[in-house]
Amino acid sequence: MRHRSVGTCVFLTIITCGIYGLYWLVCLTDDSNECTGMGHTSGGAALLFTIITCGIYSIYWCYKMGEKLDQARAERGVPTGSQAILYLILSIVGLEIVAWALMQSELNRYYYGGDDF
Image (cartoon, rainbow, N blue to C red; front, top):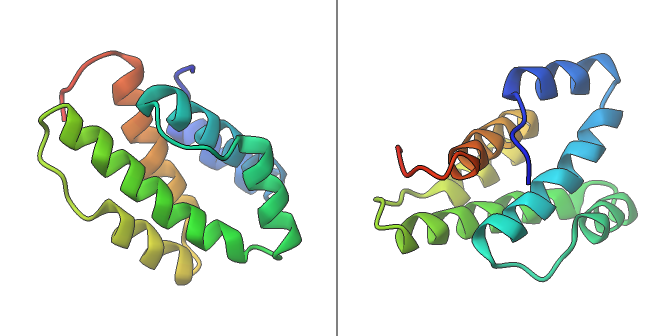
């Protein structure tokens, strides 16, 4: 797992017309699996399912990432929200990149080892 600048990831995703976003999806999946100890789907599998389903899987993926990060917060004694619902709504209305940015921000907090939510 490594720290990633949210702004840089968003910028690169926009500049590359989404190609960097595919790499970012893989990294988010793998980092969340490593950080939380939950998840059975690798980043490569998530990317493959997203491509096969023409992006429909990524909506489900956003929801499951929200659940995973909420559970990780609960295990650390941090108040949880409904991140799964937020990420789901953002992905349905076409703002998936915002959901990814929020996920990356959350994972960056775990990277530093702090619970400064």
